[in-house]
Image (cartoon, helix red, strand yellow):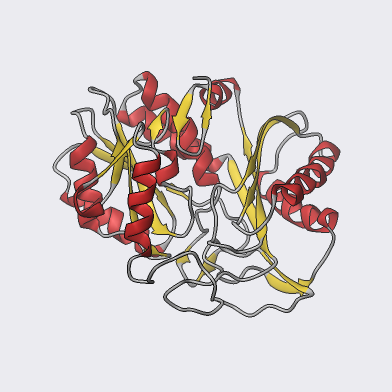
Length: 329
């Protein structure tokens, strides 16, 4: 195992310290590293909080700032943060307008965020993201997994919170964005969790895992490696089948890398996905390409499509200033 770490027991703490130092103009690290929050908390604004296991960077801490999250909790690698972390984060950024949790549909996250919501003595609500169309149930969850579509939910809901929308409005908006979003991914290699010291799964040099989860959990099937066009056809086709979009529908296209895939290849996938979407009569009005919801150093990518209306598109275009996503400012 070759990794730029000092010790497996300190990698998360040292990474959080480095992140907070590198982005000190945007974020502050909470006591005992329980959470990361916006440096400047906005009075009277609904507080948006997310989090999950580490190893998916820049999700979620990289999306803290103007126009997105107010705080995020980092668990150990691929392990949910604790309810106490979430409770501490909520208390740190709540300014009286309520708290909205954005939670990926994984068993540990669901259980711990639910416990935190019950313990929190302020008005709160939860958006559950379950955009992964690959499988209905997996090792980590009951029902569809929450994957790269989480970014789109956080961006659109974050913009609405920034302009002053109320808690109930934000909850309804987040649920609507989630319903309009579908994703599917492919892995070409495994990743190695530092504490394990060996690849999460074994895969042949001429194989790929179709429908893989962001922890390396199995997808639909193991198949022989195909071309970018073939991979995009299966991923994008599954997404389109799930969304059942009418011709002329405007969408956001996110091609997301899993941590070990260069941009050169991600843009090949953009080109391949566009062929499928154009043939289906779907109109891509916004693109986002890069490694935003990763699985350590796993090679592969996911394709996410979100159907948008004018109101959602306006919120997507609204100014954002975070460590990982910045425009309009």
